[in-house]
Length: 457
Image (cartoon, rainbow, N blue to C red; front, side):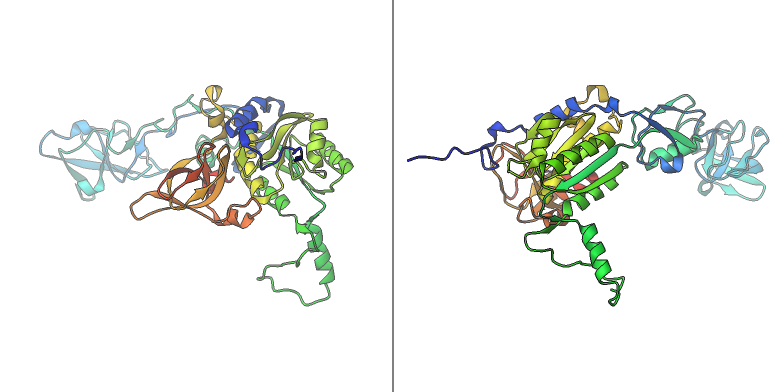
């Protein structure tokens, strides 16, 4: 009996596909952040999420001077006896912003408030709850701990300290530290320019459809502003272009310069034109769809024609047809067309690549591994669902993690895991990572989860 010579497909065994860890290693090796040049000096209020272009050293101490950590009385601990009490005259008050300017006479105290500069010769603050005081004197017993409740000059940051290295992505706490050191502006790497497009003649641009709908409805009764606006069912065989909006939202949170190239027609000429346009304008190109082996999958064909291919097909689900390489000087990710696969591959590969190309560095970067570089937080959790998968591929299933009554982290599946079920991603708060050599997860088994609140940009 004759048989058909079958072409490679997603139903094949996974031993001929690239493992996820190998793809991560190859991604790390192939990225070229040194080719992304350009520095901006931005006001501190605009620096959050940007990557420092130069190291920052402390120009002075923080705190600048020793100050009180609590409200109380500043004194020299040596003036308090080892036993019994001492009655000290109160010779003044030190307020935050208005210090007591006179030296502290021996055997006296100064009323002091949190943040106020310590008087000369004072080394201790006794909190107001531990004294007996009137308007002129304060009585303190022997239970004084020298140095207590005093913030030393430079105890947070000392003058000349390296505060941040180049390559640090500035977070809210970093902005506060820089402000405390008087930096009004900082040098940062320029934003990456990222171009993206989707492919498919079945896709309807939501923007164009909404504009047409608005024009048709201009003479009709206006819809109340507190109701969502649906522009109706697309034509037979058509789909609204959700992937482009998903990618736009993901990129919008990444502090990059976005170049939306829209929906590209399923033709060789249109696809080649989109690649050439994107490569001329962007540091990174992202496409969705057209990377498999179908007759209309022109992204794969043009990428192999114009690009330097690092990998194409991975032993993962969702996201097997994931392409990465370079088109000229621009890095390129060809993401699958299925909506969930777009999000999963973006989070696992594109997001860490964006950080790397932006010049961001990790602590101990010189010795970092591909796993360190991907920086994906995974924590153990107990599965309360039975999870099925095929051996030989790493799977990223959608789940809901929580803490049970005994304090354990547990995770439940969101249900059907098809790569086209975008609602399963909206229902999830984590990805369940199932290793390639695992075939079935039973309730009670330990799995690893990636919390989306720590993974999504």
